[in-house]
Length: 524
Image 1 (cartoon, one colour):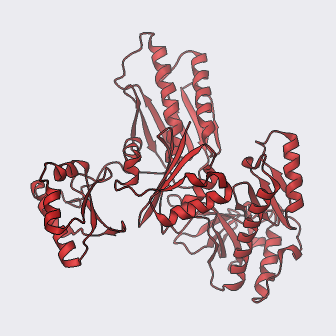
Image 2 (image 1 turned 180 degrees about the horizontal axis):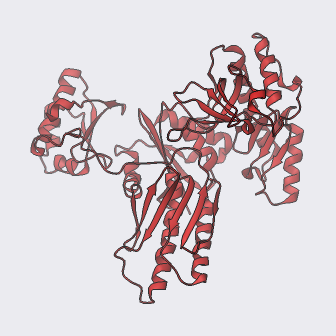
Image 3 (image 1 turned 180 degrees about the vertical axis):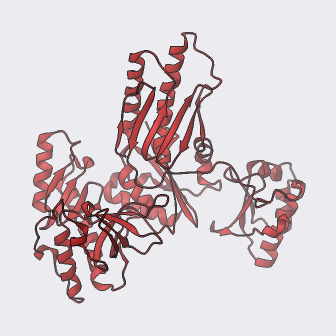
């Protein structure tokens, strides 16, 4: 199996697609100005105590206050609170954590009301982004994740991933980390650290320690509260940190700055693979070039077709996701209804495992498979689903089919499920239902080009239009595009873009920066 990552960087957002054998399996889309990211650390203030819930609401500078439960304060909360006071008592000289005295662990059956006060400053980290009407979820137990290690201040323990089975390797890793980690820091050794040399682990540990030092320095020197003191790495790098494996053949990025950022990170964690990071400079949009746009359009929405006419219907409720499996207009198997049901269900299991990763669906997922009478067929379906989910990084649990033919799946939910609207809103009527005649659309485009070239002075630009419109503009020896070039110069470029609706268009300058030429008045 070959894996490729395609990163589409635009002015307002960044999209990341993971392809396995050219098939889209993971997709992340995030605005570049997103306020929250899992892993961000804040120095914030307690706003309201909720003794009934044994929790509190914390102001981290967002419109919805964040939620912090007593049990999420962490066993070392008292040590953190004392150290925070020591750091803030002297704005010039930082009190070193190695000299900090660790207090007894926080009692598990304690009360939020006796531990915190309104207005108290706390050092917290986001563990779950805002979902629906809920604010972000916080923890007081900070962690700084790297490729091989996770650093945890005030923990002082070394834990090794249980997925590393070799007792000799586990003992080696534990001994190595114990010898290089500083006092008052705990470390979790991740699965990918297996077989790594001391120098590689020590190098990453120093990077993680610097992140902690930078964060606590910011706490000491800034007085505004709430204040972001540590920001998780960029979305592209954060995804790569968790996903990266040696089987990657290519990482394509269409932005020079982000490409350098990704290349620096890959060079840091796997110097021999630095060459796989490549800057995409093609004229065709990067997602169109790698067939990602078409897969996104066909893979999202309520109905997902998967093979021979069978399809899934995926619905989202406040409490759970519900998936219905339908055989559709598929040809019946000559081996009978049972064989047909098994074949449809096995195909559904393959597609559903992909959909869970692709949409990042979390919480409870209920799947209504087609009824099967034979116990061995039901067991085969359960085993197939378990095998398909082995590639999923999110923690999950799968139960065998119930007597009603339902399968229950729980999957870790960290951020809202990816919801891509595949229905296209008319870009030329803005919901009014009336547009200008389609035949004059090219005249409208020419007036925009004339304004761009002769009034604004942009001589080189790229006009992105729907593939059908692009074909019309480019057709013939003396095409419409050629006429525009004779009239306005050779800087006129027409690009086919699959993401655009039929009468939608976008202008980009020579540096591929978006030029807003839309006017709602043109539809009236």
